[in-house]
Image (cartoon, rainbow, N blue to C red; front, side):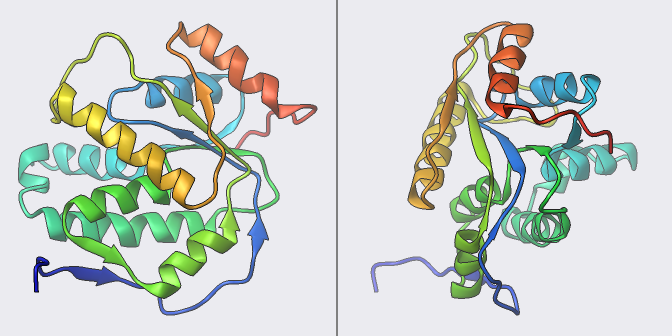
Length: 200
């Protein structure tokens, strides 16, 4: 009573606590994440592109539009949840990796579609810890694309929801202010101590 019907995403197993070397480039839509990830890749770091971006680009190459691919938001978010869980569950834990977003962003978008996380999924998220989360502050100029269709107001709302989700899972975010790509890159790399680039 008083609540809308919801789907639940739950993984079939539990996981033990594990500290990884995954560094997340987080933030709302069109905050510059992909640009930073590409710059890190050029520097020789192991990077993983955003799952949603990869699935949308693959669909576009097959002749579909981003709107068609996301026409059923529940089905689309379920597809992302399974794909993103497989990605992050399979990444090596002892190698420095930068990822364009993480499973937590997928949780946020899933929640917006009415999908809640089951207890095993929540435990997995609590146990498999990212090394650092770099949160990119919104850029000053916002443009919608074939992949990013949210309005600027919605993008800012999502950005705040993502920030709150990371904090809910116990992460202290490293805020990356709006700046040039080179300045953002220098800021992020300064946190890596003596960690060296490792090509994929």
